[in-house]
Amino acid sequence: MPLSPADFAAVWLTLELASLTTLLLLLIGTPIAWWLARTESRWKQPIGAIVALPLVLPPTVIGFYLLVSMGPNGFIGQLTQSLGLGTLTFTFTGLVIGSVFYSLPFVVQPLQNAFEAIGRAPLEAAATLRAGPWDTFFSVVLPLARPGFVTAAILGFAHTVGEFGVVLMIGGNIPGKTQVASVQIYNHVETMQYAQAHWLAGGMVLFSFVVLLALYSRRSTLRVWR
Amino acid sequence: MTWPFTRRQSAVTHISGKGEIRAQFKVEHAGFALDVALDLPGRGVSALFGHSGSGKTSCLRCFAGLDQPSQGYLEINGELWQDSARGIFVPAHQRAVGYVFQDANLFAHLSVRGNLLYGFKRIPAAQRRVALDQAVELLGIGHLLERMPGHLSGGEQQRVGIARALLTSPRLLLMDEPLASLDLKRKREVLPYLERLHAELEIPIVYVSHSPDEVARLADHLVVLDEGKVTASGPLKETLLRADLPFVFEDDAEAVVDGVVSGHDAAYGLLALHLSGSAITVQLPHAALLVGQAVRIKIMARDVSLSLQQAEQSSVLNLLPAQVLDWITVAEQAHVLVRVQVGGEQLMARITRYSFDRLNIQPGLSLWVQVKSMSLLSSN
Image (cartoon, rainbow over all chains, first blue to last red; front, side):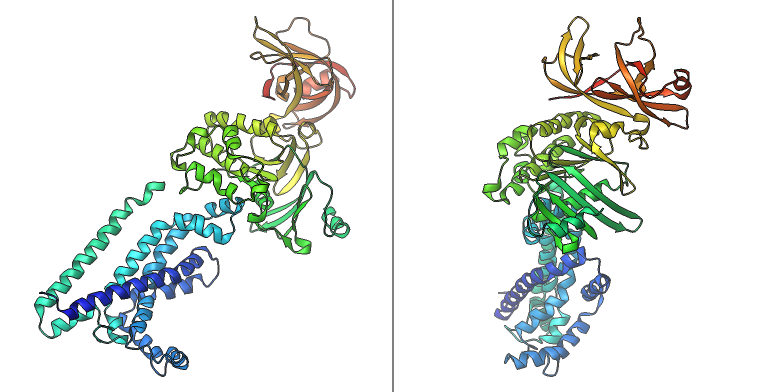
């Protein structure tokens, strides 16, 4: 058996983390992307830049700040402690929060592009056909932006699966709680278990390739409506 | 410009005065200002005519509530949609308008049927006065229902767009140059449907256009816009003939007259028409139509000449007795547009100033007009 139970647990935890993070990102990212796509506010550029920060910052920087703020003296830590939740560092919840920050631009940017591509015309047509703003969003914007949502979900999921630095900083290496696949590979290499590292690493390569292949083949089907 | 405010003081909750459209919009953008007050009939087609940039489309967007003018008042057949003085602005999706966009603007993710039903489903069943079958039949799109908009021609898309707007049973139909993006062939394909709308529906239509031809064919009421201001507004025939204006259609000055088919000469292919309000008959080459049918014809000022005597032998078919009303000088003083009364109708003749002086034209002078050509606009 090439993979140990600990390896399977790590893979399972990774998938759990990525699924939950993607779901949350779609919920959080949609209003942010919609606002960025539509607003003429002078805050558009600063907010857009903040959302894009994880693209360029080393994951350790994000991890460090999250660690500090979720720790006993940080503002998130104080809040969670006052709610009787303890601190979120070295917990699965903490990992989810970290992953949401880390993968935010990978979800917001495809959505923003999709919303911008829709333009004002279909929204105005919907308004003259008696659809209110929410109705328009669900009956016109969502279906027209569907390719953008699929792209955003795939990128958000895949990017979270590939996360390492943030996890190590705020989650540590607790089996079944915060020990995800990328960290487990690191463990195997540290302990010279190269065969097991190969299986996990090879699996990640295959997974990433399949995801990107799916993404690129979608590109050619995006124009069905045109 | 004062009426919105006088109304505000008189009628507080209920607005009576059914049967008309009252609008006042003031919009200011960088480099553009719209400042109009319009009083339009509550039925028939009102054309907003002007060059591009004259504010036609801005005006239409204010009617629909797509743009919110900084100052505005809008009342449609007794229903108040905007009164900025009282802070009232009914948002676009709560206004019973139908809007036909210049480029159809169909939903790409819905089939033709899905597009047609989008607005239809969103109005209460009790308010539906136009049925799907009716709209489909009126616009001739029955064979397209299952197609996606991307697979339709421009003309077909525009017909679907019109049907989609009609299916919301609007109290006001707004059309933004629905033919402008179509080539001549497609225009000819869609125009008859627009004429049917005009003839068969009770809904008032505000029609934006920069084409004199479309306006003459479709409009009952004409509003001329120039640089965001109204330069003329009134019934079509009168407004086309208003000699005090810088000419509405400039070199294409024209008159529109109504008549009734009185016969047809099959041997020469000539249709005879009785001009309304008189016993005067005109003839023009056209296929036979039913005797008694009402028609509208357009006569360009440049196709009308004046003569003091009745020319006995002339190739011109239509020699009509007329009386001079008034005139203006146009085109760097070289030409004169003379307005004449022919029976119950009025025509314009574009003649040179030289001829004008030679004929010694005076108001009330009786003379003969020779109409070299005229075209049938519509028959309904």
